[in-house]
Structures are given as C-alpha cells and as structure tokens.
Amino acid sequence: MREVPLLILGAGPAGLAAAIEARAQGIETLLLDENAAPGGQVHRAVGGFYRPEPGAPGADQAAEGLALIEAAAASGAECRFGATLWAIQEDGVVSWSEGGQARQALASVLLLAPGATERPMPIPGWTLPGVMGVGAAQILMKTAGLLPEGKTWLAGQGPLLWLYAAQLLNKGVRPAGIVDLSAPGIPWRALPHLPMALRAPGYLAKGASWMWRIRRAGIPVLHAREVAALGEGRLTGISLDGKVFPADLLLLHDGVVPNTQVTRALPGCAHLWDHTQACFRPVLDAWGNTTLDGLLVAGDGGGIGGARAAALSGRIAALEAARWLGHLTPEQRDALAGPLLHRRAAELAPRALLDALYPPLPMARVADDTLVCRCEEITAGRVRAAVALGAQGPNQVKAFLRAGMGACQGRVCGPAVHALMAEARGVAPGALEPLRTRFPTKPVTVGELAGLAGG
Image 1: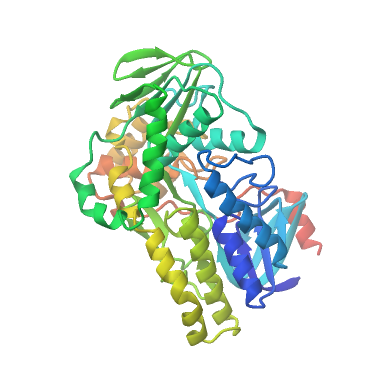
Image 2: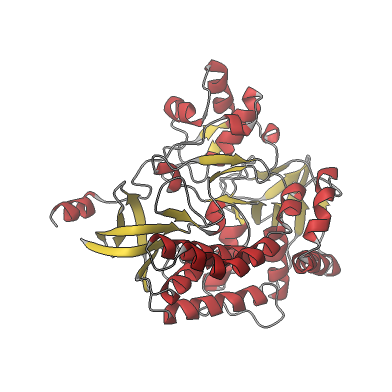
C-alpha cells in the first residue's frame, strides 16, 4: 500500500487551493475527486465547456476558478479524477474507487474539502419529471450547454436562484417567472448584520445586479407562501397559494448545506448545530482541525462561506497540514497564515446577513402526503406519525421507516427529515442528533472489495 503525507478529498476551490499551497511548502500531495474534471460545483467545467464571456453573470468567478485550476495543474500535486472515496479507516487508510477498481493509500494527514449540497425543498409533486434543483440545472448548463425550454419557473430563495435566472437571460432564455418564497421585506433579524455586510459591498452589489437584470427584463417576480407541482406523469403546471399557472419546468432552491457525509461516519469527529445556517457542521478551529488528530476540513464542507472564502480556508488548512508534517513551525505557519485569515474574515463579512435573510423554509408548510425521502418513498405524515409513536431523532426514524437508507444515504432527505422531526417534537433542531452515516458512503462493488483482499 502506498503512503502519502497529505491526501486531499475534493477538487473544488478549497481542495485546489490546498493542493497549491501544500506543494508550495514541499509536501507530496494526492488529490482525489469523483468528478471527471476539477472545479467542484462552483467552478464546474471552467476552462472546458463553460467559458462565459466577460461581463456575463458569474464570469468573474469563472476567471478565478480557471486560475485555480491552472495553478493546481502546474503545482505538481497528483490529481486523480473519477476517484470516488468511500471509506476512511481510523489508522488513516483511505479507500476509493477509480476506473472500476478499488484503491487504497495510507495518509499521514487528511484534508477533506467535500463542498456543499443543495438543501432539500420538499413540495407536493417535487418527484414529477420536469421538477429539479437549480443547482442541477446549472450543472447541465455548465457541462453541456443545456438550457431550459418552454415555460420555466424558478421557485425558492437565495443568491443562486437569482444568479441562475440572470445567467439564463444572458443566454437568451426568458423564465416564465420567479417565485420568491422568502419572507417579504428585510426581516428585523437581518438589520443588525447590515453594517458588517457593507464591509464587502461587492457581494451585495452582485446580488442587486442580478435582481435588477430580472426586473428590467420584465420577468414576473411573484411572492408566495406555498408552491406545488401539478401534473400526471410529468409537470404541467404549478400552484402558487392556490392559483394555477402552466409550466413545463420547475426549478427549486432553498440554499445549500455542508456536505458532512464523510465526517459524520468518522467516530470521534464531533459536529455541532450551526443555528445561523440551520445545519450541522464539523467542529473546527481556525485552522480547520477537527476533533480527530490529523484530520482537517476546509471550505463549505465546514460551513457555508462561498468560493473565495473556501479557497482561503484551503490554503490555511494546508499550512496547518505543513505544521502537522513538520514542514513548518507554529511560528512560521502563523506568519504565513495571518494575511489569509484576515482576508477570509473579510470574505465572510456578508454571510450573517445572507443567513438571516434566507433561513430555511419552515417544515410546517410541508403537507402530510408530501414525500420527504424520495428513495424509500416516505411522506412527511409518516415521519410525524413516527414521532407520535416515540421516535426521538432521525436515527430512530431511520430504523422505524428506512428514511435515509436509500441510494442517497440521507444526502438529500437528511436535512428535511431532521427539520421535520424538530418541528413535530417542538424542540430546537440542535437538540436532535444528526443522522449517522456508515462507510462505505458511496456504492462499491463486491468485485472491487475482493480486489483489495487479493492485494
């Protein structure tokens, strides 16, 4: 079995930046990513199919992503794509699948940069063909140039909703309408965070420009409390507070949450409930250290902060890895990381305002007959019934109903089931333990496991 000083999971902004910094410190580095090319979600296909023209929505971010991708390729880090990590052993042995074969490496330090996943938005009819997430639609645009056709509605809340709508307009596609499900006006809880957010006015200006493009183009922006997808066999319309509109495609978005699938499977890796972002995240110090020695987390997998903050977190974590491996003294690490920590704090300045403006949509709106676990076809009503029978948390509901035991292993339904149970029990979400995960966190064949046993 090969040994590597530093193994990084994830080739998004955090992972790429970490690999660049690690190589600059002379550390042999292995970078794994399950996608076919680097970039993660935010920089997906940048430099390949996705090349937005200057001035287009998201073009500046794409330029930053291209610079990261090119620097990582030139850094000397060993980057392996199409490599799906599925297990980490307590002794540091990492297992992944690549090209139909299982592979292993012993890592002295592990740096996880798994990124974020879209928060589920269960509504009536969300499993109909013609209903998908905004993030998934953006992936199709970036990787294949596929754009919506027909009457396309975007529903939900958050910056990505407006960015994607502006990107569609830039490509000549007019959405049928935007359904804004966020609380009307600026909630009082957001106002105290405005002065801090104004320390990074560029982010607010971008969001305002996306909204301005939509309104200038005459795209209807409707405010609603409840939305439902309608149709038999496929989407034909949407209902907004009982009023029906024809629709061919409905794109949903309710923000993103850290991808903690791997960290929750590691015994001793503590997690906490982040009440500002309404999600669980691993317990981290300023350097990205978890509660397990030699295990670091960087980027949105440790708390949502955006691409620039993620890249800075990756560099900071790489410097800490250099300290772990003896390449830097603590004093040298501090000197190199000081400016990065300052810049990261500046990039995170608007975060509290965004979290206050766009809290997750309340589960009380989810009707009993709405599916929340699509893999196992578990409705909100069945989850509430399990709570009435005495289920205390998601892990008991998993045993009662199999919610979270399907192909997604709780990646999609986990946050929804957790929020639904907290609402049903009348307790704070942080009072419930997170859904426990088990290795392998991704599918692996018996043949791949046998190959490992045979050396």
